[in-house]
Length: 117
Image (cartoon, rainbow, N blue to C red; front, top):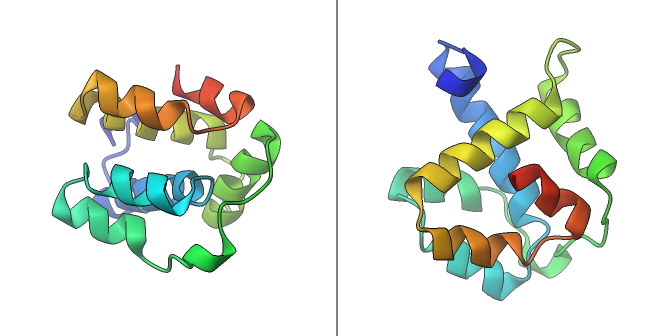
């Protein structure tokens, strides 16, 4: 992921997958499907992997809890989960229309939405 200065594709795809899962798990079923329809096929596969719609959306609203999911997945103290989330959100912004990103941002709790700016 160029924004993170990573040259390891596996690590970049892992970051993309983890952030997409965290994002997905905070959306309603209808929002998950609408957002997923906008993703390229390969990325859509990462996005839906392991999804259990009956257990979502998560009720947590705090940025720290959202970021803890990212940190726990990486298990690397040198990774800044907020930086990872912001980089992935920027990649999504770069590859989606403004309307698509605005729509999904407004579905998120305020503290998590702030990571998108």
